[in-house]
Each structure stands twice: as C-alpha cells, then as structure tokens.
Length: 427
Ligand SMILES: *Cc1c(COP(=O)(O)O)cnc(C)c1O
Image (cartoon, rainbow, N blue to C red; front, side, top):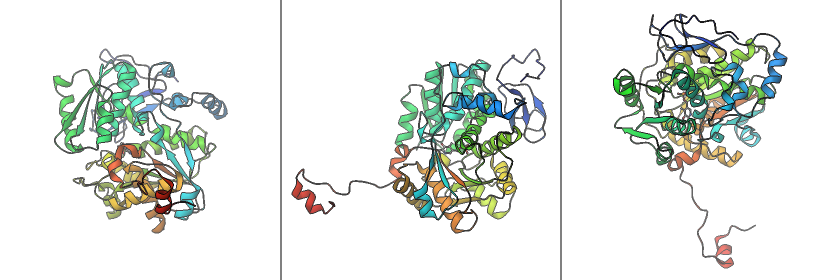
C-alpha cells in the first residue's frame, strides 16, 4: 500500500491510506494528492486513484468483517488515514438493507427487493458518508473551515461533522429550502447562508469564493475536496454487497442530483470485483430523477451524450441540480451496464413515499420517493426485470420533507369510548 507519488516542494506530504494520486477522469493524467479538483492539462474532473491491497481476498474480507459497524470497516479501500476510526467523527454507515417483501409484492418483484435505508445515518441522509471522507482530506490539507454548496442535506451533514471534528463551518444553501433542512443545517451552530437563487447559483457562487481571498483556508467538501468527498459513496456499494453475502445485486436504482453518488457506486462495485471480494457478473445501474429536474433522464431518452441544463421545479429539492457535474458519466454507466435513467412527476413521488411507508414502515424523504417511484415505472415499462435481485436506495429521512406529504389523524375525537365507537375504527 505504498504511496507512489513523488513529493515536490509545494506538495505537502499527506497520508490518506491507499490513495496514491489524483487522476483525471478524461485524460488519465495523474497529480499528487492535494485540494485540487480539475485537471491542469484538460480541465477534466479528478478522482482518487489507489494502490489497493493486493493478495488474498479472504484475508481482506475477514479484516473488513472484523472492523467497526460503520464506513471505517472499509478504510483499506478509502482515502483516509489508517487511524481514522480513532478520531472524533460521526461514524456514519452500515445502515440497514431491508428485505422489502411487501413492497416487492406490490410492485410484482419476484427476484428479491431490498431497500438500502440511508435515513439511518447520523444526520439522516447519505451525505454523512461523503462528508466523513472530506473531513479527513480537510484535516490532511490543513483546512480549518468546512464549507459546501448544498441542496439541503449536505449543509446539515457538514455542520454536524465540523462540530464533531472541532472545525469551523460556513455552508451555503438556496434560500427557499424545506424548514426541516434549514433547521438541520443551522442547529449545529456554524454559519449558514441562504443564497437568493437555486442550487446552480449557489454552486457558481462557491466556485467564485474559492478563487477569492475570502475563501482562503476553506475546504469546500463538494468543490475543492470533491475527489475525496465522492469516494464516500463507494461505501454504499461495499455495504450492499457485504449485506447481500458478498454478492453484487443484479440491479440497483440510485437517485441523481449531481450524479456523483451513482458513478461512485459503480466504482465501488468494480473495485470489489477487481479485489476478488465478489464474483464478477453483470449488474445494471438505473438512475432516478424527478420530472421537474430531469436533465440526465432527458438526455438518456434522447440518446444524447451531453446533458442540457434545466431550471429545477420539483418537490424533490435534494435532487434539484439543473446542471449536474457527473451527468455525462451517469449516461455512460447507465448505457454500459444496460440500465436506464427515468423520471417521475411530483405526484408519483408523493405516492411512492406513501407506498414505501405503508408497505415497509420506512418514511423516506422526497428523494426516496423518486427512487421508489422510478422503480415502479421501470418495471411497468419493462426496463427493470422483476425476476432479478434489485436494490433501491432511500437516501434521506421523511422528517426533513414533511410538507411533501399530506398526512394526518384518521379521526380527532373527545377522550371517551362513545366518541371512538362513533368514529367506526374499532375491530
Ligand atoms: C445529495 C443527495 C443525493 C445525490 O447526490 P449526488 O449529487 O447525485 O451524489 C441523493 N439523495 C439525497 C437525499 C441527497 O441529499
């Protein structure tokens, strides 16, 4: 696991476990580990390249299984220092993989349906995974303030992780987010700034801030730390395979905001195959969007390689990125694996939230409604094979998007038995 990068005078020596370098996803050019995110040759996005453990898969599997019940059990495959589990952090991950038999019956899935329920993370969304990795990179590069542009969940995850790690934070969100997201982002006490605009405006603002002295010393988890941040999503792939008994699912349905999560789950599956931890067999990756922000789905259906930006208008605000950075990579993966990208409208999102709650006792945020709704549609359209093992992601908690679902008491009565009898609910 040697770090095979020559250090230059300007490059601080960093030890991030098996991470060997940053490599360009377009031209393959390699750079020393550092807080950079774009290729200096072609401006392509950078990702972490590894010297992954070589040798006996059985001993690696045993080492993982003996690890903590959180994402750090996969530390040998992540860009984090070897003693990461001993540092103060939120310890996210190892969330439930729920065998969803009742939902399967409703959807007509016979090959086994599972919901990976990431609402169980410390700040109730999958974002705790990516932030945990970004925090380690921030520490390694000496940043003292954590920042991000967020569609809501990321702001809360950064605020909480910064507090636990003893860092400062200043996070940026669109001004019109759900109350549950705003409170979660504010309560940890770091600075929270609402920007008058949508997520794409927030993101553009943060890119400017990075280049300005005002943002000096700041680690933006999804901008200048993005290559590290993204790697956190690989843990979803690892956990799903481990929880399936070290097997790949046949099909997986993943929500798309920037598309980062989807591309890194694919990367995680490929690594497990390369390491001999799972049998090499085909899997299909499906992407899910809300119709009101469906630039990747639109490009997929039109057969385009480029994604045309949209102006978002949907209740699935956590997925409302109109100009998704990883869009073209998502298209590649969906096409290469034989999957698809599909979208559902807001009404279908709400119906799917209720369907999942009613059948499995899982209350998803709108993003979970998008994946469940898209799964239903993909089955109806014959694109997803109901006879195969299928995993659907729920990436967030319904308590953060309460306004999306109109649900309330079956009856409101005086506290006496006659009134209850009159309501006609008994028996
Ligand atoms: C951020 C987010 C996603 C997906 O994000 P990507 O940018 O595509 O990685 C999915 N679900 C929820 C709830 C999120 O907050």
